[in-house]
Length: 80
Image 1 (cartoon, one colour):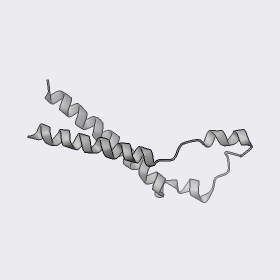
Image 2 (cartoon, rainbow, N blue to C red; image 1 turned 90 degrees about the vertical axis):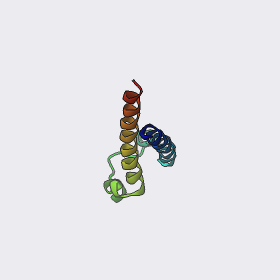
Image 3 (cartoon, rainbow, N blue to C red; image 1 turned 60 degrees about the vertical axis):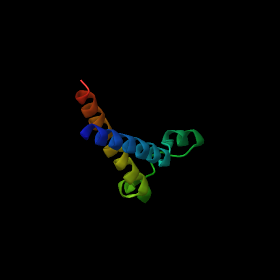
Image 4 (cartoon, helix red, strand yellow; image 1 turned 45 degrees about the horizontal axis):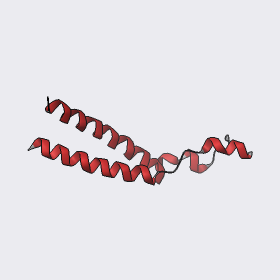
């Protein structure tokens, strides 16, 4: 019973994790220097990015990845 619940949770986490990763913006800040843009300019947006939608997606991704690995490890240990 527990194995079935964990497998369903793993599938749901996998789908949600895939969707969250697809919603995230690319990290192409290094390419701005090729066009002459300065990477040292910090705006209000970059300072408060943790409270933004992008920051929340990064935090959710981290939590879901940790849950994914823990559940996968538990399922693997349980199958031995």
